[in-house]
Image 1 (cartoon, rainbow, N blue to C red):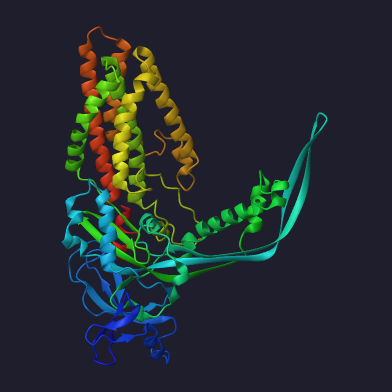
Image 2: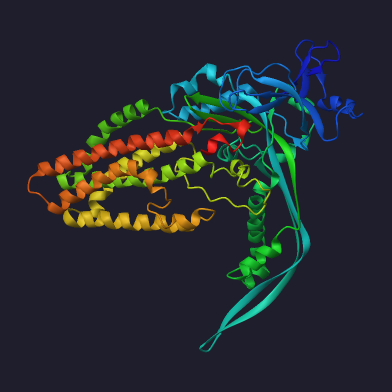
Length: 549
């Protein structure tokens, strides 16, 4: 805690003025003035003294210059007085001060929630939103440089009579490349997906670190070593450097960096100097706890960009579906001539689409629960925490709702697509009778084959075996109880289409039963989404311990 030089009141960092501010006498103090007073050797070099609050439930630690006891754990959502102690922490090299106030943060969060029409009402509760906490999150900021002469192969091809002649060349050039500001979060408690969603930060505005910037805020401690993201950052540099060099007229003329020469050029461009600096970057952080699960909302404290794990309220979703079904019913009757066979095929196609979505979602859930989709968390596990900079994680299974304009809006788009597109196009494309079931089976075979091929090339520790398992991602035993429901509807539709009974009632009963499995599968997908939008309660005092089970 810093005392005002005029009235001995408490000084806190003022975001608007970017100064330490006394609320009693309105005194403004330069944050670096306190830093200079400690240059005489009060603290060991590279360290500063701070109050560390530790959650007794999850072990999460936050650092503060404020001695006031924190009453809310940001990591597990526990409402309890946290244990505190005085500790010395490593000084980061740089810090970006908060420029967005808590009111700005709440406005950005509210704007995001306006699009999330299916979000639980608890997420919009003012009492919850007031729990947003300003936390400086640790980041590794990588810099790369290369200034030397490189050589790489090129070739020219021309035809002479019936012969195709290839002339090979060795090109050389002087390379001067420098990359700065590649930032990756250095806390295993901060999800890679959330930290990536609120990126980037304007690192040109970072300042030399002094502890007085923390006054009135908290800071997370880093537990991810710099090697964890080093190869990923270097890959970005190599890809960009290769694109820039490929645009050179000489390289285009001699087709440099193509075919087998791409690997040689990549190695030639590999940076000779690299460094990683620990920095603290501003993040507004909120946790929402629901039973044994927790979801997070974060806002970039510099740009105001917001991201959140937003679960879906099943009751709201079903109500919206029934309301949309009314105009959809009249639309289908205007545009289509509905026959029993078409209804049954549409039901089977929707069931198949549910299988695809559910399969991918379960794969992502298994990756999330094991920590395989978070490089920072995986790097501190006991089997990876060896300091080996060559370690590579398996590429995570993509989630349909992770990117773009927000998970809630994409759920609406997905709902419209799964309802309208198959209903309008399936009868035209697939046809009817026995040929219809043959078409469905052909589509299933093609998509499943594509999934298996894609999973075989997913890389990493388990990627070599995934392509040998059904449904492109393995874990069939875990997926079977969920996928068997819509699959049963498809089998029933197939049997009825093959038998081709005379009475339409068989088609209507089959379609009703198949649609029942589709509705069941959709509710499973909502549950899966909520699993992805929430996380297991962290056990941060046992990093890599209880959460592995």
